[in-house]
Image (cartoon, rainbow, N blue to C red; front, top):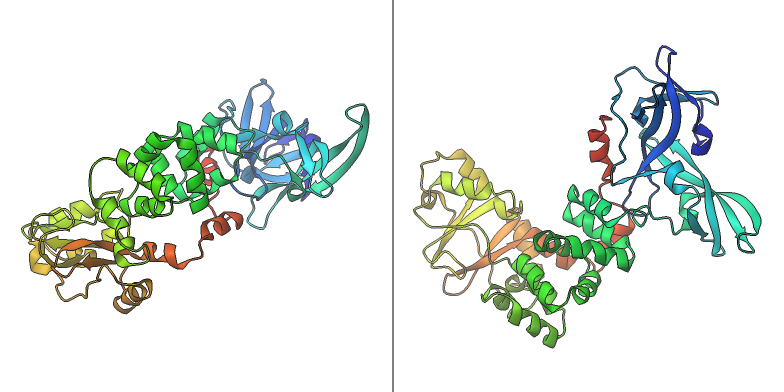
Length: 427
């Protein structure tokens, strides 16, 4: 590589050469991705203008050399389709330059005049540094130009510079936990715009991954009626946890607006750090006459969490919790080894220990460790299945209360640019 750090404004106009030295076009801009978290933006590629004036996208992994006189591409095909900017993408020259920022050290106002990109050890390119011009006496005098690390300025969150429609497009391909982390980084106004645009089911999935503080803040914004709709769409155990953290008057008002049904209210009757308070009342429950094929069809549901798909519970009617007499459980690995026409009742594990609704966090953790399980049945004194506790329920309560915030601060979420790089043909 001719240069490890290159300022984008200086790239503009450089010739782009193919692997045989033939001239393809000229660089017009660099495309960076919206990045969730505090890390520097990732560079997806270059906008190259062909001799025909058509502008195309060239992925950074196709770039083998950047010299003061030219950019050289590696062997391989490049799409000649016209470049179209996507909602999660930002143009460095077209959108970042002249953007207002604040220098962290001294809280000095400045404008971006250039951005430096450089490769990382993993061959990714990132916007590592910014050249900024400080504002002196308003706009009447030209201030000093400084070259600073990306982290040394604030006010240039790329998510803030995207429209709500663009952010929603980015969030569509992200996991709820990643969306929750990204939302926590947005200003309140933009956060509220995104939340208002999400449907109740998607917002419920995101809510389940938020910190307690973010949940309470957004509930206030949603208003009582929509908050009740979102709570209904959440898993009953997560909804009960959230309601249990609210003042009683607010919790009662939301419960009154929710559809009649005792699952959330029943969970609220248990202490939050017991099996009864942690369990989900909606595990996979089958009658004794169900076949292995039916059991496998139930656990193939893509909306079923992996821990709950690890076993099915066999009970006499009724099949809604609290059920009829609990007969035992059937592990997914066992189901996969049996003929599809076999009855589940014939392969149940009736000897596996059960969790009482009053079992403490420590007892549940020891239970999972002793039996090498990720889910366990919660059964009352009369042999009724009340629900199932999963290992993630336990971890949520064993970890510090602010663990979600720490995860966001560590920038441990998946970078959405991975999917975009694949779509751009840079796999």
